[in-house]
Image 1 (cartoon, rainbow, N blue to C red):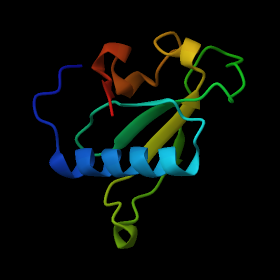
Image 2: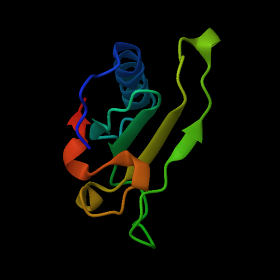
Image 3: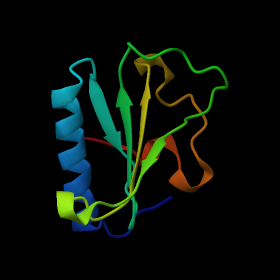
Image 4: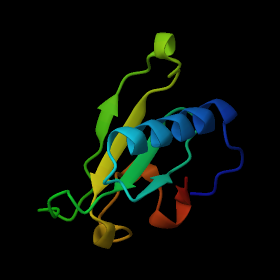
Amino acid sequence: MAVQHINPVIERQARLLAEDNRKTEPDITRVFWFPDESEVRLVELSDQMPVSQDEELHPFYFRAAPKDDLPAPSAVAIIRANEFGLLKLPSHWGSWSDAFEL
């Protein structure tokens, strides 16, 4: 999926969530963002997570919370570092090569 334009509101929220999640969960070693025009999509790496049982990425979805400076819905998945690039992504996320490290 080629991203022609990165929505600055979505990027700002992605960076904010990545920073907050790292602060609250020190076991997160890396955070990757899959750019989208209307939703924040993050994959966070932590070897404290159990190994995937079905080789698929299962993000948690959150509604937008404008009052908390989160104007867009978000999806966050935490996986083991050795699963990065191997798990099957949700079909609308594109491919692993679309991810940017934050």
